[in-house]
Length: 198
Image 1 (tube, helix red, strand yellow):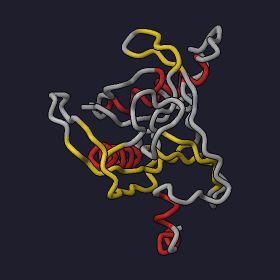
Image 2 (cartoon, one colour):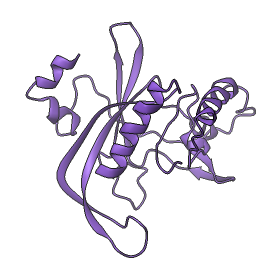
Image 3 (tube, one colour):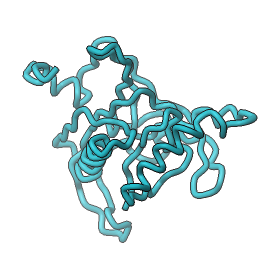
Image 4 (cartoon, one colour):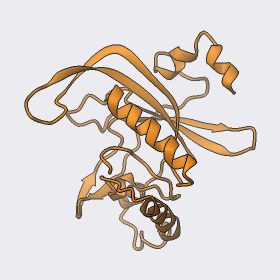
């Protein structure tokens, strides 16, 4: 409902200063295989689950902040995202949606005056960048890694068809997901995490 944007507290909710009514903030614990190796416990280091909403069609959607700050899984990182990576995720998720590829959706992108230090090219030239929070929306944020934490006997079969569909959709576009590890693969076959890609 676009009329909600005009509410005086809209920005306060989506920059994380005020808790959305009914929100249940939590960081998700999961494992993952990264770059061919089991990485053990990972978790939402920069993402925060907020809860579910039901839209006008009766569909349930999960809301998640990305970049809101430290979580129990942030390790040595600050849990923040910056404007350039947040805009990339916002634009890519919406582009994929409109190209017919199953994906998370972007709800909001809010930039603050809070500055974080980032070394963009990992060359020792750190700069200050504006911290940004993106609201992500998906049927679920459960990943293959959500079940790998329990080491099931056959984790492959359940999500095979939906994963095959999203991978073939991306392949038809000539698009390459740069971090397609089990911690970034949804069990319902939507594209998660728009970090490096080509």
